[in-house]
Amino acid sequence: MRIKVPHTLVLMAYLMIAALVMTWLIPSGEFERTVNDIGQTTIVPGSYSQLDDADYLSPLQLLLVIPEALADAQGVIFFVLLIGGVMGILRATGMLDAVIGILLQKFADKTGWLILGGMLTFGIFSALIGVAEEYLIFVAMLVALCRALKLDGITAMGILIVGYGIGYGLSLFNPFTLLIAQSIAEVPPASGLEYRLILWPFFIAIGFHHVYSYAKRVAADPSASFLADIQSKDSTAVAEYPALTNRHKIILAGFVVVLGVLVWGIKVHGWYLVELSALFLGFGLFAAIVAKMPSGDAAQRFIEGAAELTATALLIGFARSIAMILEQGQVLDTVIYYLSMPVEALGGHFGAVAMLVIQSMLNFFIPSGSGQAFVTASMN
Image (cartoon, rainbow, N blue to C red; front, side):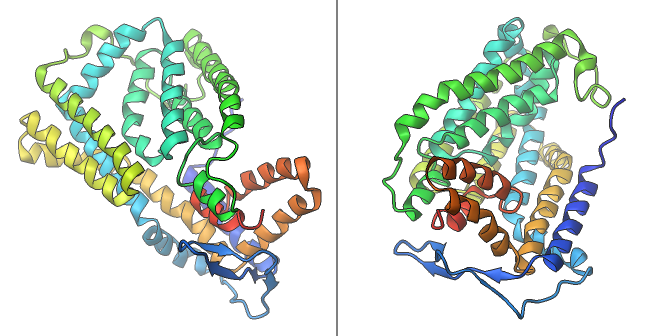
């Protein structure tokens, strides 16, 4: 018997209520902050103190915090909507279907290589330059490709999430997490690189085993999919995909150029959501022009594509509201303080293991890797 899981928005509401209750039960407190020599705001170790005059949050705050959180997360939200719009245009050009058709021919009986190659690609880019949200552009194509190979959406997201998760966890030069944390902790940049390189093949092997095992199980028995009850059972035969035309090739070449510019912009100029949104928006316009798509059709496809990701965009804002409740109730520093105490008490190798556990728990309160680095690196 399958357990009925509440809608994601309902789960978010439960977590918001839990966060509000935490502000009533947990003592308010804060660390002193300071700005270091390179302009980074960090915690002053040992400066935690409880607050006696903290504001009481009423249940009404559950409603007030949602629009505040949506405004606070506007960069990510609009990036998601713009990516959805661009994907709508790309689907209309037929380029994505043509590329999927070619990949199906090459990987029809080589799903293992597809999974491994995808995981390595996503993992390497995340490990080197901290790519994460930028992968949204690949989600639709990955899901369509996996479904056509008689897999499912979970396999597609496993390729992406497990791959980039390993890249982030065993970061080589990720500027958004590793280099920030090492700078704050005053250790040499990229120190421990050799150790992480040794771990890379082991983690990739474990991740590949899990994703591939699930993919084989779904391919052999579609009812074994966790999405068996909700996703379409239909798949498209290779012969039904359009041929790759010269216009498709030009759009595909433009996409490769965009990826190169993306890597250059992030690495050299520190581009983030605003610049990347503009980059993908420009690519969508380029694709529409090359495909000779009427302006009205392009606009309609853009709107339809953005509409498909509206729920995702809203959930991002609701998720941000959980952390904002803890911040406004001034208990987030208290949570961090008490979570860090076992690390200090254990020290050495056991302290390192405890640090891993604590950082994993902090993901629920501080989902940003850079944010965690600023908050916790100076304490460790």
